[in-house]
Amino acid sequence: YPLYTGDAILQFDVEAAVRTRRVAKDSGALLADPSAELAPEASVSFADFSHFTDRGSALVAGAVAKVLRPALCQ
Image 1 (spheres, helix red, strand yellow):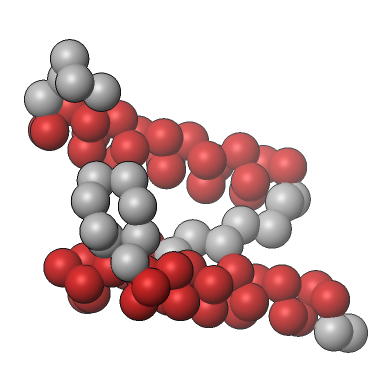
Image 2 (image 1 turned 90 degrees about the vertical axis):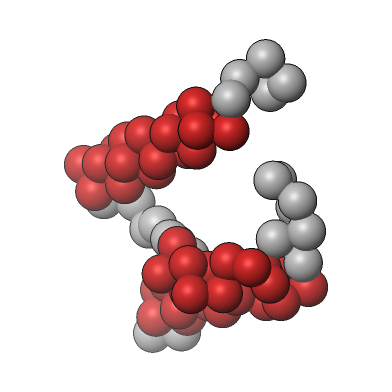
């Protein structure tokens, strides 16, 4: 990471997310995408560029639970 600019790292993450969504859709896999939950609270969700705060972890866990609950509790 130290060799890349912040913009390059962010663009890589955007492109990786697009491809991840496509692969999940094409393969019929469940995908928990916490981006909608994290975006409004980005300033309190991340401790640094790669680690969540407790609040961020809770938001991600909630996004995962929304996807897994219907699949596991039929």
